[in-house]
Length: 423
Image (cartoon, rainbow, N blue to C red; front, top):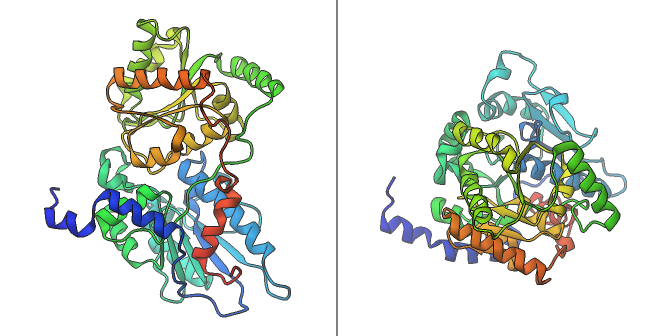
């Protein structure tokens, strides 16, 4: 829908929004709806976010939930009950990546109601279960959550604005749920969180409310520079299990149109045909997506030329894929942040990203930003540039700050919870 000039002016420009988002990221919000002093925290989360295979959003919710649990338990004053942690879901526990055994799983008991779309269930049946547990806090890790009244401190994390910017890439039930409830959630929650300053800026532009805090994704300790022995073991595993051998270009993401992987495929072919790339394979890690079966068939048919599609890869094996890649390429038309970009940086691998604010944020100062990720020649030139920078040793390889580890990111979430455990 065409938006008026007045509407855009009232909400501010995207650049102005980023400035506001960065300011709010360093200034915690006012604390509302806090439990009485000395009472135990009783927090609930959206458990469907943790279903297998764990997505980028799922990994964000899982890792922060684990780090948050550790800190809440460690900082509980003597004589005070430990926090009670609840997870609300339609799904059986074996289909979820549980943060730990400390979490109480509240599963939908009725097989009939489990068939409801995820967000519809959470706002109806899930809300009823949550009210029985007398929660003090609820964190909606996928933005949309139950409305539990003024005594429950509500938090919501916004990861992207796909329903505004690329609605055609969303599953139908998710798209309609966001159309129905996203704007309402942004207005009503006590604390609005975003995974990047870019996402916060888009919230200000589209919804008139920037995030109260920016809580960026982190990376696990396993994403780091490998020793020579570890690199040799990784190379053997990649070859034996997946038929992958260096050198190769790498992309990590679901095979769906928003990832713009067709442009990467064209750039890879162009580099090989023009002699600017040798016998490099093209490795695309990620689950099969939707809406582009023709391109998926083209990739599969290119196996003999060097395309490798290992599918979904467990997180324990991802450092091997990143570490041995020449370059990670992320040409997406839109991302809310770009966790693979940060993970590749932690492993010392150069990154090429599309000129999208959120991807520039994830890539940091050493990322190679392509001027037009939709054009094969532009993307190919950026890949060559990134490879030259690596050969020249100009990338800050493996220099991800400690604060970007998950334990470093949980401080901001504790501030957002307002539990009183921190000054």
